[in-house]
Length: 380
Image 1 (spheres, helix red, strand yellow):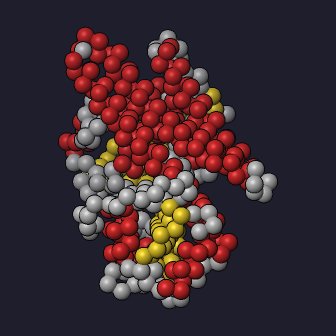
Image 2: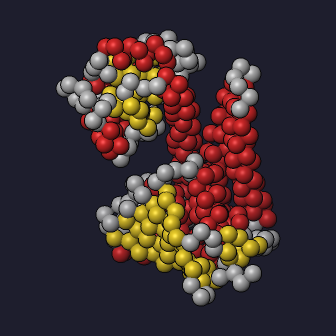
Image 3: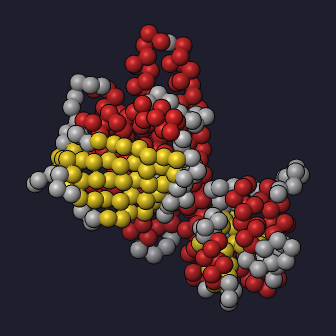
């Protein structure tokens, strides 16, 4: 638990904040000294002291030893995650505790390093994890803003019943733009950081710059399509082409969900269908977002082929739904989320029907949800 004490006034710095929690003086101070060339570093000799420090300042990364007296690293990790879901946590493991460090990844650790860590590996790990934490904070803030916008739109819908179809279309637009816009802004921030570094670091960092630029470009293209769709409403039919469904899912995982390791792909390596790249991206975005927001720690996507169909199964181990809730969700206009619109599955059913595809939903409370989609196979 975090003590309820008022945080002291501290000086504000532009450098990322790193907290090192280790009961051993030598390793703790050695790590702090190494990182101090690029980061503002604070140290703590006990887990409870470290938890108090986290209340006082906005840290980007925590370096956390596993074996400590009073409260070990695993229990401290659980407390950190209750306080801050976006902060990066790097576990330190000595000889004999490697399995424990690997298990810590299940409890929310982002990475682990052997103790004592290699200096270059330590520096690169903290750089990457600091950037990742900043992106997650961008996402969390923007998601909260989008939820407020959705709630406002829902109130307007109820107040302006004669214009219900226009209001629902506006909610659909905000609903589908939320994730890709978060990606655009998050990666744009990384681009700025990389640009600043390129002037003083090795040329190979240009490769990171180009990779981020490519993701921003693809996400921006998706946003542009949604905006154009809104302007044209139903007057323009989506452009269909032959698509590799497996490659499309991989792209959505990378661009929309930042290669979230919770999402795992299995099954056939290629599955060609006839469809709209952008419309199917909307479907996948909605279904995967629902699965992740259900509290799932694993979202399995399995591709299959039979004589007439390409099948796509999305199975999660989230909180699941009872039979009546699942029925209402499939019908549309129903949500269990405080700031949800109830439009996500309705959007998916409409877009899949336009592709000649079917969608079935199976769910059980506390056992997760499974969605099975069958597309007509492409013969080309």
